Image (cartoon, rainbow, N blue to C red):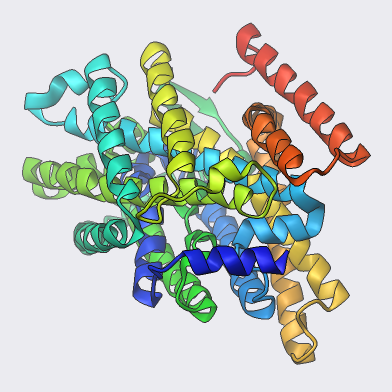
Length: 492
């Protein structure tokens, strides 16, 4: 197995340095979520519930990033992040489910990015026909943009990384400006007026209803999680990094910058308008808040910056999700067809799979009017199981002493605490997401069966009893998910 990894690593000549990895994390994480965050947070929560939800997410995600950093440094022989750790825990099937599910989840996220880009265009008078990003003109325009960016990614990692670095710098400037303006315009009475309230305004039904503080904080989790998905970007790209130590450093630096931006924008917004008013703002809600502070030009600025920001994030995620799918074919967990690189060292077949799925989802969104929030919740749920696998492997590594032969007892204890916190967080996230999202995730895993089956044939490995039972369980869950969607018992 090590020989295969070494040979495949030598095929990659254009490596990414520390700066590129940090930009990849920020570029991939700071996308549509932060611009829509005020409204998505206040849809079912008031300030106290939002703060509790953020506290849970912040602790959990910092624990997860600590796990990523620790495993990268302690076990450098595993150079393919989530996939490698999941495979080390549960074998080829575990690695495949983790990375295929995460990669397809990112492809779903790309559909939400495209939706919110053209929803932002819809905020301009000239482009009203784009509406909320799910009108047919928006779907057609989004499809063109999707394949243009896919073509750019297919030209190679070096070119797409440069573009991502530029868009990352562009997106941070307006966000910093928003935070400064929000500090200057913050009104404490607005913030405290509904601080502990259990009355929440539902923007969809336009009715008030009672929601406990616990339920409010739980509702915040998926929205907050979506804005933090991407912190693992450097580990996904570890096989293309110049040094594995840069992966660990980039994860720490990127995480700190992202948390400051996300918490700053979402919490300070609560001192500008009441939660019931924020939840009714047009997507992206940050544009409406900016208009409240400085006038209509502020809304125009945020919409323009969102378009640049999300296009940059889309570039990062089209790159990342295809890389995740490629890794499943790199070491035999799926057909080697997925691992095929073109002359620019881009994963051409994996790109076709992920961008093709994103295209299909855009068409479905056009038919069903499934907007930004629906897509982001589905995308987020697909990331929870891979995070659970990684957390479990980190706990196992600490208990078994894997990677700690030359390390101090104190480091092992710290690693154990981070692993246990990450595990508790991912279990709570599964509870918060609910059974319906696990069933929907099973539908996605089922679509990858052919790739896994072909990988088994190419490696001449028969299915084990555990693999047969697992695929049977996934199939039954997927059928239950499909029935739930058709019957209406599963809805968003």
